Amino acid sequence: MPYAIELIFEDPGSLAVQALRDRAAAAGLPSFIEQAGWRASIPLAVFGQMDATSMRLEMKRYAMALKPFELDLSGVAFACDMSSAGLTPTMTPELDQAHKMVHNFLRKAVQSPRPDYFPGRWTPTVALGEGYSQLLVQRMTDQSAEWGLPVRVIVSDACVVNVNPSRRQTVFQVQLATGAFRDRS
Image: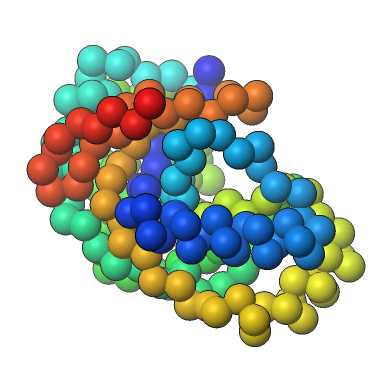
């Protein structure tokens, strides 16, 4: 079963991203299935298996080593294979550090990590939707000036998510700086 480690935005940032997802859907971008409790996020690593006990300990250590930080979502990116579209953050030292640290902290807890998420190969994005056409790219590009980018968000939590295609489910979520686990059910 695939899992992901993601950075999560505070609720105002998630709401701003949801408004942009709604704009993209209005332009014709098929949206991901909405689920209760969804918050916007940036995947840092994707892997096949994990040791839940080790992962919980390592995620707590990881979260305690980071402080919440601001991030600007400044552009829209489209996957070359037309599979998905997303918002791109401006790379900051804090985001780069969070990404590199997750790979260092979690070596003991995960198996089968996806190499396209390794430092130097990873492209950070916040999902907007999946599947598109060249016509949609043109339509969204024409409307992008109206999107109000950049959008400033605050990264406040990290989580482990089961990324089963039929239903995403948060396994656990931890607050940055404190390492406190949150119940988001």
